Every structure is written in C-alpha cells, then in structure tokens.
Image (cartoon, rainbow, N blue to C red; front, side, top):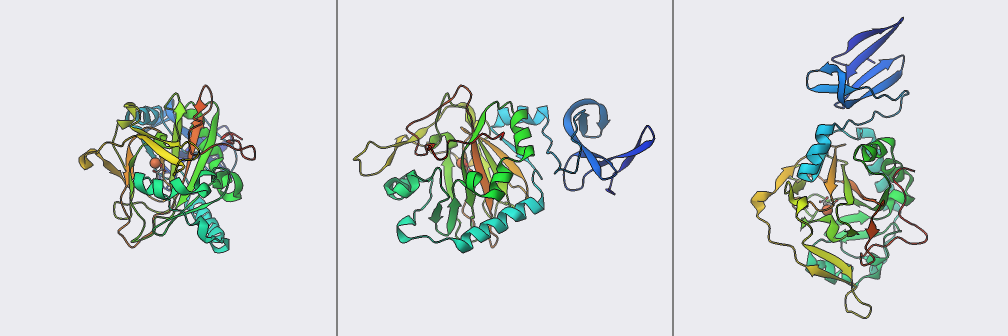
Length: 338
Ligand SMILES: O=C(O)CCC(=O)C(=O)O
Ligand SMILES: [Fe+2]
C-alpha cells in the first residue's frame, strides 16, 4: 500500500507500515496486503491530532470507522454526530445502483401513491388515510412526495441494504455507543430530487417512533451523494434532545376518519437556532431520537440521495403500541448485531 504520510515501522523481521488513509481519517497498519485498523481513543501511540488505541482487525475487510470517546461525548451533548467518510464511494454507489434496479422494476398501482411527509396536515391527509402506510413496516413500499420516493424495510429484504445496515462497522459503532440489544425498526431511501425534493419540516424522530423510556431511538443517516445547503442537507438544533418530545403521532381509534392523529404540537422554532450539517458522500450522521432537525427543499440541480435507518435499544425498552409502525410476525424488528 503506498499512501501519503506513510511511516515505516519495524516489527521483528517484518516491516510494517503505519499510514494515514487518504479516503478515511484513520490510521492503517499494513503488511503484505493485510492490514490492521487502528481505532481512535487513548494510547501510547500518538500522531498530531490523532491518538490511537490498541485495537485491530486482521484481513482486508473494509476499514472500520473511528469514533473517539470525545466524539461519543459530543453526540451526547449535541444530539447528533457527523462521521465523515464512514462508507466508501463504492458502498454508496452500490446502494444507488441497487435502488435504480428496484425502481426500474417497480410497479406502483394508483392506490399506493401515498405521499410521505412530516407536515401534520399532509400526514393526516395522505399517510393518515392510507392503510398502505400503516402496514409498511415489514414491506418494501414506495412513498411519493413531489418526486421524492422513500423505501421501507430495505434493511430486511434487500441484500445490498441489509448488508450495509448490518455491516461490521455499523455494528462496531453500535457497540461503541453502548447499545446492548439494538434492533432495526425502520429504513428509508430518500431521493430528494433536484428542484422538487421537498422540505422536511422540523421534527423529532421520537414523534413517530415513540418508546418508553425515551432516549432509545437512534437514526443512522448515510449520504450517498454530497449533501450541501443547496441540495437540502440536514439542519439541527444542538442540544435540543434534552427537553423531551413536543408531539406524538399515534394510531387513531378504529372508526376514526384518519388512521393516525397527533398529540401535542411542534413549537415554532427560530430558524436561527438551526445549524446546517453539509456532509460529503459516504458520510454518516447519527441522529438522537429527540433532537430537533429538518431539511430544506432541494433548490439545486443535484440530487441528494440518502439511505437512513432507525435503531432502538431494545434492552429495557417498550416500543409504543400506539406507533404507526409495528413489528409483525413476519418481520419482528431484526437485531442490528446479526
Ligand atoms: O433526509 C431528510 O431530509 C430527513 C431525514 C430525517 O429526518 C431522518 O432520517 O430522521
Ligand atoms: Fe428525522
């Protein structure tokens, strides 16, 4: 491996290289095609800006993404965490081409043309009146919003998305975050097409994915293309995950005119509270279930494809029976670690 910033290290008779990957902010120790991935953290080994802990994986597996104690602490403070270059360009392209194949093969009957929205009135009109939405938890289903198409249950049924969701580096990240029994509750592919990809209004994910206690839901949001302020990157209110939840979307009583309704209402947030988090292709943003976030409409010429899935720490947690999304006998929420 010849990478910039390579240092040679002697180890017995063998020569090993400690090098900084150009595509990932991590150190790799390589020897004869095998490599050891060094993880961030405390240790005796130091280089400017990087402290390294003794942690390694043999073999040519995809490099593990680093997350330091400092980053985990930041996540708890802010309610989100940006991990640049978590996935490779190849992994992103494989998800994009898989979605292209799925779309090319899909047939969407007219009664299935349900819009996906976080806007309350639109939700009540569209999702709220649709059985197609309520039963989407264990199926791959399509939701349109002015050209936006979302995909459900990709994490369970599609081999490419399943492999990404349950990839060793995602599992490792879950362990580093202290998740003991994480289960995948939901996944979406969001196209956010140029010019027409609509805004996602400020919300907390726990409004839609409620648990007892709160604080057990975590979003993994993967940029499959560069996400910029122009094409609708995510915006967050740092620290807003510590104030509980403002509203809940619950299943309505049977016989009601809509099948979901809202309890509570979303406050009017000041735009100035939000900070944009542009991120390049392959980056991962972790989203705390109660942090307030949004995205603007895509007014640019470039699409902003993302794959996102939500995980719940199942240990000591009750999934609300009132959530629109329910596990089914065919698809109980799968463990992240299998
Ligand atoms: O991608 C977006 O614009 C919004 C996604 C989102 O809110 C989420 O993944 O929780
Ligand atoms: Fe969200």
